[in-house]
Every structure is written in C-alpha cells, then in structure tokens.
Image 1: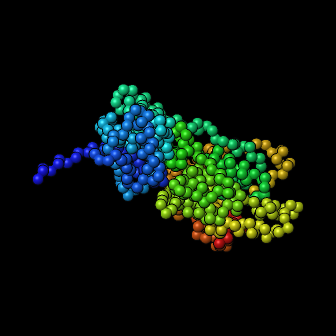
Image 2: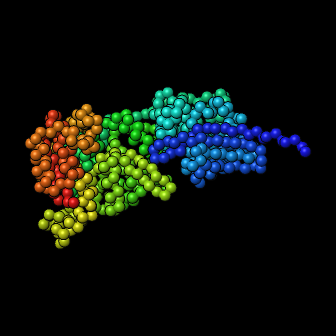
Image 3: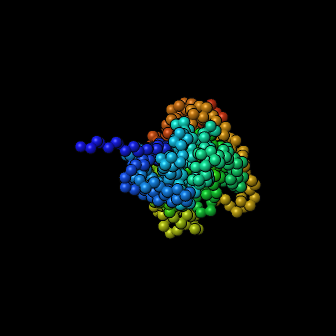
Length: 507
C-alpha cells in the first residue's frame, strides 16, 4: 500500500472591508484562498449580483496590469457568511486580497487597511457610496483606509490621524505598497463656506404674522403649517427658513455627511455647516420620500436630517406618503422594512408645509371662490388626517399682501438679525435641557401657575389631545426663550394658542 500523500497547503489572504446597513459600516473580512484544482473563480458569502460580477472586473483590471490569475481554484469568502453583501465597492477589496494571495503585495502591509472601491476594466478606481462611514469605522478599529482618489478628502473626516491611501488606479496602489512610488498624503477636507445663508428674510414685505411664526418655528425646531391663497408668499417664507437657523454643530455635520455619503450626495467630500433644505414635488413616491427601493436607500426625510423638509401643496401628496411621515416626525428616525432589508435611517428634520385653503385656492374670497365653497375647503383639508394635523406645532393663515402694501412696505429685518435671536434662544434650550424644545418633555419647563391654568382651561375647551397640549406648551416655552424669560408666562401661552387654530386640530 502506497504511503499517504502529504496534505496540499493553500495560502489564505485576509483583507478588511465593509458592508453597509443604513448609514452604518459593518466590518466584512474578504478571505481569498488559492489552491490546486481545476481553474475556477468563486465568490461565496451571500453576494448580490454586483458583488458576483466583481470576478470579471477584477480579472480585467489585473489583465490591464499585465497580470493573470493563476490557473488554480480561487475561492473568495465574505465573512460573516450570513450577512448579505451588496454593491461594487467590494471590487478593490477582493483585488487587494488576490494580490496578497498571489504574493505581489505583502500581507503585513495590506492587512493594516480596510479597503473599498469599484474597479474599471482598465484598473481605475471609481467612487462608491459610504466612504465617510467606512472611514469612521476604520478609525474606530485602528485601521487605515484605502479608498478611491476622488473620495480621499471625504475619508479625511474620519480623523486627522487616519492613515488614508487614495489611489487613482490599481497599479498606483501596487507601486505604493511596494515602495516604488508612494502616494501623496490626503489633505484636510474642505468645509463649505458658512457665509452662504441663501435667500434673505429682508426680501419679505409685510406678512408680520408669517414672519413671527417662522421665527418661533426656527427657535424651537417646531413644525409649521401655512395656509393661504396662491401667491400669498408661503413658499417664499419657507425657503428663507434655513437663513435664520443656527449653524450645525460638528457632530450634526458628521451625521448629515454620513447620510449624504450613503446616498452618494457628498461630492468632493465637502461638509456644510448650514442645515439642508429639501422640497420634494408632490408627485414623489413613498420610497423617494421615506426611503427604500431595491437597495433601501435614504429618502427625503433622511436627506433633510438636521435640516428642513418642506412639502408644498401638502394635500396633493399621496395619503400613504403623508401617513408615513408620522413616525419620523415623532421619533427623529425612520425604519425601512422590506423583504430583504430592514434598516433605520436618522430623520430628525424640521417639518414645514404649505397648502391652499381649498382646491381652487380662493376660499373666503367672494369674487374668486368656486361654486362649491365652503364644501370644497372641507373636502380639500380632509385629505390630511387628524393625527397628521395634530402633529403640527404651529399653524398660520398667510393673507396676501395688497398691491399698495407691497409697493410701499420697506425691507423688514434681515436674516442675520433674526438668526441672532434664534441662536440665543436655542442656546438657552441646549443649556437647560440639552436639546431644542420641539423634542423635550414640557414637564421640565419652568412655568408659572397663571400660564399653566390658561393652557389647561383652553386645552379642555378646544378639545386638545395630550399630544396637542404638549406641543402647545413647547411653543409657549420657545416664545419665552425668544424673550429671554426665565419661566413661561400667561401671555406666552396665549400667543402659542393663536398659532394652534381649532380647525386644524380635529380628532
């Protein structure tokens, strides 16, 4: 009997990469085994079609370098095997692991980095989504990061000490690893000029009630519903809300940047200190507004994180879209559940909406109202459910400015002046409870007995729900913060009641 053959030794290379669940980067180890056997190139570990097609992109990229895959059995395993892997960003990770397995790149050098990037057939490294989250995760794990050259500055937000290698193509990365031509360090990431505040509030003539409601909404982070005829200035007011909001904190900037990176909306790696402003059209679908689709991408509510979501012509949005807004308005996040995905995105946005009083828009105008008035107004408003309307902190009727007033009215306060008041009011809120009033339990607000009695009596008379009373007290506290008052007084509650009209708070 012949002696047993010695076991066949195979070399296994391991390189770190990432899968993405929502905006979170989940570590994935790419293992490559090159063993004797019939020539094959297999990828296992729940890859989707894009990951499976990496075989041909990696093969072509290596061929463009003058390299050929060894005529052996090549097995690529994505660990953990029970986590679905999506996207072409595994191309570069697999390629680096193969180069290590083939002995072209030293394992000790490459294993110090997490890798992501898409490969072209000629070896170029193309941009991918999620680099910012990957950089933060790599820094947390004590690894460097290899990413596309175009996204090196985006990765730099992972920290000044993060070792970033950003090659333009695969040959440049190999030369860097072999010490033949070291790539230049990635410079600090740019920050968008914070002096760009957009349209100025001084352009708004008249509309004192609307301006006051906008300032209160900005100061406390409150939701606002504006109703008025076409051309009254509702959209114009809403578009100027970002100009009176304070700058984002560094933590908020990173959160917003991670959402934008996951959505592929962070060109040049530039983070802005200014809140975002999203105004989707009323024809937007439910996945576009809330998030979802085949890849469970973030929707408008998440792209407006720490910013403003403005819905014009509110009743024209689909009923399912409006009802889906109820959860993120309350919780500041949205859960997207699909058969193959269940992800949670941040969605702490400030909700602003505008609507006409009826379909024709001229309810209450005896000369231009349609023949169906006032029933048309009731039917039009009924498109918005009571629970949805109950979530609006402030409601205000925007009356059209007369031609005489528009012609003779001077410029009002500019955005810088109002923004200074708003910033001071928010500073008081942060110092008192660590967050804006719109997301705070009003039981912790300082309030005198006269204010509490008025809120309770009027709330009972108007039939306010517990949520409605809570939002009333939050608005009253914001009005007090704008005045610099130590406690909520009766006249603060009275003004807040004026912005919570009965016809918008039906059960």
